[in-house]
Length: 109
Image 1: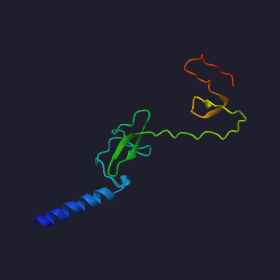
Image 2: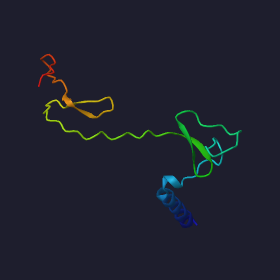
Image 3: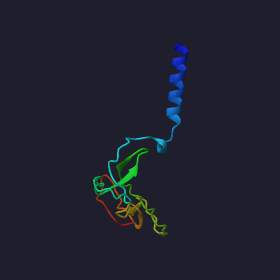
């Protein structure tokens, strides 16, 4: 009998570990309405969230911001301290200031 329960437990753990996240089943409650829904008693999601299926019902999930790739650029400058970065985190064709612990900061290259 112990052997049966061990086998059952092992098979359950194996099945749970191989299940993909997309096949998970959440709460079977309609916690939000989709754009296609005409049911007015179900609330909509707050700003920054989107109503998506959880496998059984619907829940509000944060909208994932897709980070755009930096454009390709060509720069003839050699920057020993590296390039400056734009507010988006993309490299610019200008050098970072050089930093030396015992000298003042300089922007000259």
